[in-house]
Length: 64
Image (cartoon, rainbow, N blue to C red; front, side, top):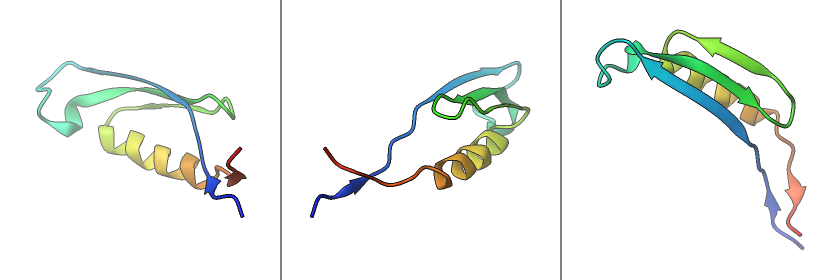
């Protein structure tokens, strides 16, 4: 039996106008290439939450 894998490709653009050490100063856009879904966010935590949601939708596929 072949192991299953999940793969996803994202383009993430991040920038900060504040302190780069402060996670909440980062904002940007993220796009899931497979689905075309994209999202703008004002806090890094929002991006991470969105990535978790999108990755939960990725189907398992047999390794080839």
